[in-house]
Length: 358
Image 1: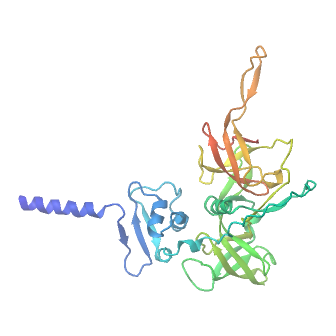
Image 2: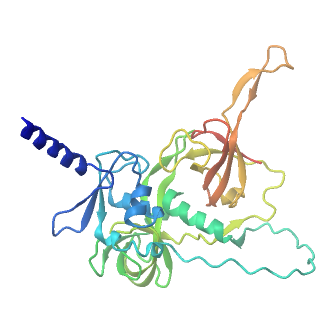
Image 3: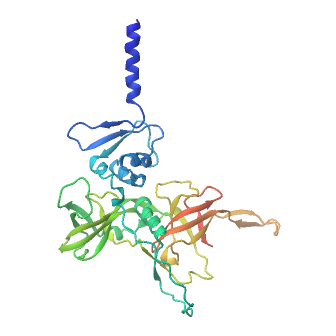
C-alpha cells in the first residue's frame, strides 16, 4: 500500500511540474517554432516580453496566431506558437521600429517678426518626436479607417527568397489593381485589412479597419506587376498583404487658426478591438478629419445623445439636454476620419456618442 501511494504521489508531482507557469514545450524535431501554454494571468504583452525581449512586439505574436480573435483575451490552456524566426530576432527588438529623428536643437531667441496674414490652405508641420512615436504605435497597433480605393492599389503576391516572414531589404513582387497603378521610384505603405466599419448612427459604410505593417519602394513595373524592395517593417509582413499610398507619420496637416467661431460636431464610430463600452485611455475612431479642420493634438468634448427633461423655465415643456461624458484627443487626423484617445471620462462612452470641438 505504501509503495502504491509513493507511486501515485510521484505521478502527481510530475503532472504539477508539467503545468507550472511559463513552461515552454519544444516542438517536434524539424519544426520551426516553440509552443507556449497560456497560464492564468498571461498576456501577449508578457509573453512577447519574455520571448522577444520587447513587450511592444506583442502584435507580431498575434499576427502569427490568427485563431486569437481578441489579443486582450487569452485563456489558460491556449497554445501560443512562437516561430523561431521571430524568436531569433529577440536580441535586436528595436529593428522592427523605424528610426526617428532626434529632438531639434533649441533655437536662439530673436526679435519676433511681424505676424503673417492668416493662411487658409492646409500647412505641413513636423510632429514632435514624442508624438511621432505615438502616431507610429497607433497606425500599426490600433490601425485607422481607410477607404476601399486606398487599400486596393496592389497586393504582395510573392518574394524573391522564400521565407516565413518578409523582412527589410527583401525583394517582393506586387500585383497592381490597375495597369500603371504603381509607379517606379515611389514609396508605398504595406497594410493589412481586417474588417468593414459601419457608422453606428447612419449604418452606412465608413471604410475598412487597416493597420500599417511597413513600407516598400517600387523599383520596376511591367504592366500590372511591380518589383519592390521592402523598407521599414513595423509588424510582420506576409504574402497577401496590401499596399496603399504612403501614409505620412512624421508630419501632419492643420488649417492655420483652426476653425474660429465654428463648432464641429460628429460621432464616435468604433474602437479598434470592437469594444462597445470605453473609458479613459481607450483608443477610438471618429468621423471628423483634416477636411473638417482637425489636427493632431486637438481635443473634443464627448456628449451623450439628446435626452428630453422638463425645462424649469417653461411650464410643462420638455427641453433637449446632453450630458458631458468626457474628452478625447486626436492622435492622427486623416481626410474624413481620425484616430483619437479618451483623455478623461465621467461615464461609460460608447460608439454613437457625439463629439463637439471645445
